[in-house]
View 1 (tube, rainbow, N blue to C red):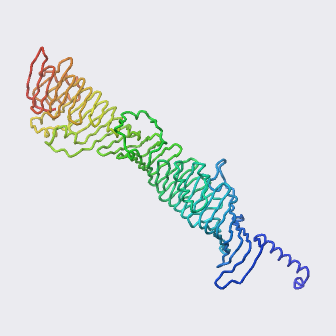
View 2 (tube, rainbow, N blue to C red):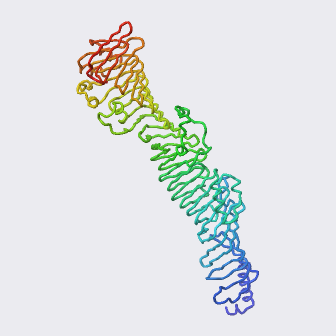
View 3 (spheres, helix red, strand yellow):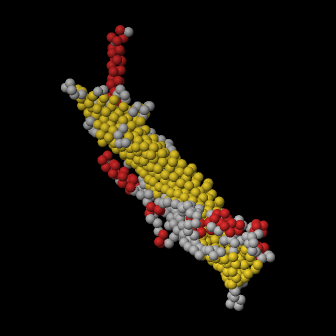
Length: 617
């Protein structure tokens, strides 16, 4: 062995090995000139040379550093003159024809910084001060600090702005992989661009980056997403936000604890308590209603709402918003707020272009003083007209606690709670108009009404089609009238039949039209029209052709009253008139205060008959 090292062959082989090692080292680091000087004790060792270092991760080249000078300090190589280089990614799986928003050409990206540091022991590269990373597709990353880790990650511990072809990502800190296919930003903001001119606008330095992003976010065609943490997955084309998530675009803002944005579908899916709020009106809505059935009873120019009343806020456990169609779908504890109107349901959709909603699974609409419920609702939120269908219930809350003996009877009735049931209701919130249809039932303290249709406005109540009004809670009515003689009578309900009834909301006066029949326990009256005057408590029944007919049985017959209770108007009248005193004339007046009625004849047969009555209508 000793002779081998002493031989010429051994010397040649050893020399070749050393030369090969030097060549390999030279391939890794190109050295033009090396000058080593002994620095002062308080200064780091300085080596002046042109350096070219190539970093590899997992068998792939990942970064390259080129500089004119290197300083050695605390076990690190420091490059402060002309530090620049490249990052190398890989071709990732992409959907054909869909470019990546950031670094689409990620095979080679150029970087530069005022200062670079390489820690050979930890195998980490640091870039500091005015760091830029660019690619040929126009993507640009600006920050003040960047670190390349052995785990093939690019960590950004400082504020950064990442501009791409269709998106801009900002954050207080973040991280990326070398393909820029998985991005993360803390306290992040993601702006989805929709205008090519804005995407192509230059963003030259970190100082102007924030203003550039602010201008991009202000573009009406852009979407701005902010959250405590934002991640973007290029493979799935999905942006995910967690913590204080906000999505804002033209006319709306969506808030939720968490959610995702599907880039390809332009959809947002949020959960955990979602709020969608219209923040301003815009021209993105359809000027025509999609459902003309809801256009009836539209308010006039005097009812034009203020801007705040126009805006809609949607709250739900889970919400999906499609930006292309501008349709929001909510599930779980869904609420729609608009001015003083609150609508609740299990699920539903809201179409922003048409300002219309469709809610199912049980719906409740609440406004000051009233509550409306049904199985299904269609809403026109531009005019605030709502169509309720299936098991409709309208409840008008009591204005105050009725005081016995205070005010007129109608005033007390108006103060009490009112319920209306029907199969269908069109409710105009702006005018307060309610249009009921199909099996309408009107219930109020002391009276109940049934009709085919009913309309309630602030001026009047109108009932149409086979109207039946009956007295209920007779004990209460007897006490209210403070007349002990009416007690026996009101135990048998008073029933009024008509084709149409109008009740004036202000005065309490009522008008009955067409086939009017009033049936009491001991009396029945038939005419073409009846007018009730609340202040005087007077009924006037008149007829156009045939005379008014009044049948009076005298004493109350409880058994008969019970048998006539369920009969329709004409049949009840016929049965009541059998064996009763029959009077007729052009006009019958019932005076409730004076406890009497009067029958007046015509010109050929004038007469007046006055009897004491024992009950009240």
